[in-house]
Amino acid sequence: MASITKVQPVNEALDPVARKDTALNSPQVSLIVGGLVVAALLTIYLLATQHISQPILLIIGLLLGYTLFHARFGFTSAFRRLASVGNGQAMRAHMLMLAVAVTLFAPILAYGYSFFGTGVAGYVSPVGVSLVVGAFVFGIGMQLGGGCASGTLYAIGGGRTVMFVTLLFFIIGTTVGAYHLPFWTEEMPAFEPISLATSTGLGYGGAWLVSIVIFGLVALISLVIEKKRRSPKMAPLPSASGWKRIFRGSWPLFAAAIVLAVLNAVTLMVRGTPWGITSAFALWGSKIAELFGVDVASWGYWQGANAAMLESSIFADSTTILNFGVIIGAFLASAAGGLFKFTKVKVGNFFASVIGGLMMGYGARLAFGCNIGAYFGGIASFSLHGYIWGILALAGTFVALYLRPLFGLSVPKSNDSVC
Image 1 (cartoon, one colour):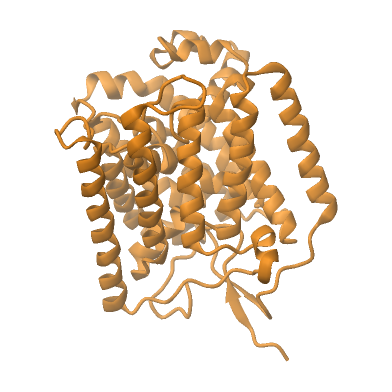
Image 2: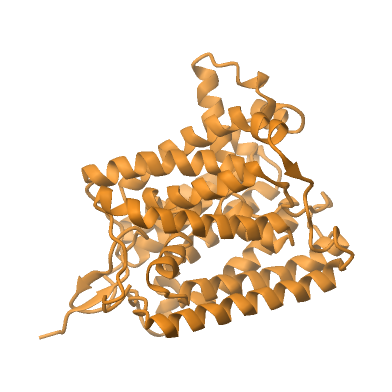
């Protein structure tokens, strides 16, 4: 009789799931074929109608989604484990990811390397009330919504039904945030964008060294907290073995951290800016609002450089293509592991997803991005706002630990066997 163990679920919001073993199910071949057909058709369409960078970004998105799912590389769960029981395993993976990212971003940004001669620019945004409020609100929202921006996309790819609710209200929230953004950026106090590389005299070499020291300190502090609190370890993932693990998972967190950093650097060189997610949600929501007669083009958010995005097809938007790729990539990964299935939506989860999605969407616009654009992309770009985003999102997580049980959502406990 096989012993019962607990493994990580598909979605970040759930407790570890009891199973008799950690072996994966058989591949869902028909789903894999269907996913590959969709990816191929979309690639052909992009090749025929868009710049060559768009199909390349779709492929990058596929790889991002595949990686996120295979490692269950979470931002929401990483923050929650650290805040609730002091487990810093995933946060140390974040630090490794960021260390690799700044190492790659530094020469790219310093010398302007790009594949198509478009130039490159990191995500360096202002530090002010908008950032503080937005990141804090996002931190609460991602704990209620069941996943951050990337977590929402890869959970949808895995068939987590309630995440469609989160995504819908994420889009609504970020569209309202786009409408309100001029108030937060023009009427509220803020400092100019601060780059550790270009605003301090350190240069990219000095900023890289400071960044590495910071990541090392965070990792060390997480180890001290973990030892002091005797934190439960993370539950294992269902996994294939041997070479099959490459295609059917699971991947160690450190491996996924390196892959995500490399893919973000490639994204920077392909489209000229790092990986982002939520600007596409604002675009989708605004286009839908236009269909209902809303004069979206008059909003301050859609003036200047953004105006062309609103007037163009969504298939011309590089962030949209990356998002499509992440969903399809996660779908392929889940089907390869025999894990894709639609799940039931509970009343508590539904309302938590509505509130969480709205808060994440609104917070992401105010904070100039989400866990990917602001935290990952901002820190990789040597922007001070990325660090502040992480601190405020963690503060929001602490608040959300008291709110999650109101919706029937779990919070890890120190006496759990795994978290």
